[in-house]
Image 1 (cartoon, rainbow, N blue to C red):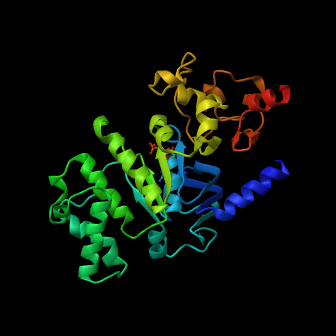
Image 2: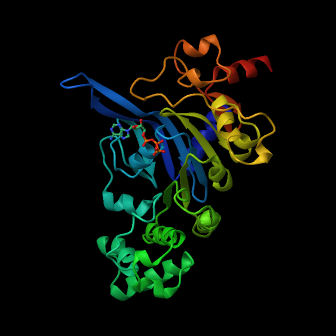
Image 3: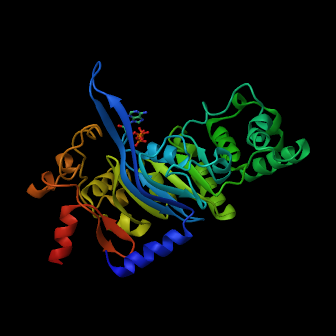
Length: 339
Ligand SMILES: Nc1ncnc2c1ncn2[C@@H]1O[C@H](COP(=O)(O)OP(=O)(O)OP(=O)(O)O)[C@@H](O)[C@H]1O
């Protein structure tokens, strides 16, 4: 890596609200009855960096390790190795973060707003719950904060005395967003925030998240297998395949000049004619098991342009494509050498 890039990434990290370095999360499993111990390499050496006011889209097929990264950032699964810093707090390396402190720094919006709100509680009780847990404010102050949050997410004041089943899916997701923001976190992880919603209201929730990001200066980590949503929301994108980032860069780099065959295949599957200047490169087969990843480049069995060297040796290292663009692929290495 060039000195300039090293310098750039060091200065980016200095400003980063979220910094993930060399993260591995391996789940131990046993094969068969009294079988040998194996490891599911759900996350296998991931670096990520995200600044305040920025949205980083983490995209990849189901099972590639996106949710495991989110859980590790929230301290819900232990890192096997590597480091995670959230808002200046190291939450790995043996010094587990104070869960209360971490909850004030990072919160999550889940995919399914139906199941993530307790149907027996009023919206006031649901939203004020985190404030009570953290001993913040008296009853009047908590009520005022609940009203402030309802306003922020575009809900009427009388929503506070109602229960979740009185609201539509889109309104419930607004309420989940209000609950995630009530402690004033600096990082919000959105795991498939619109995929359970009607297509007609997805844009409203996406726009709300973008407005809140700008208004509050929060950092958004958007997890999705839907590149259309990621394209709409993200400033930067990291494309993940079988536990590793295979390409990352700014919005423009990823969507106008995708370099990795996996990214190209994902983009060609977006149902938007603007991105279909070439015949779609359909992905062959299923994502392999992280219990037994393919040798060489893990993507080679499904890659439409795989070469002999892709199935041999180690997974490719990152190649720098541009100032804000890098990818792991032997083809990228060869193309840059030939250029
Ligand atoms: N507790 C666990 N024990 C063993 N393996 C697990 C565990 N949790 C997840 N995995 C495996 O780790 C891999 C990554 O899972 P993860 O849920 O992080 O992927 P994902 O990209 O978020 O998928 P999805 O989009 O379906 O949520 C998968 O192969 C999954 O089966």
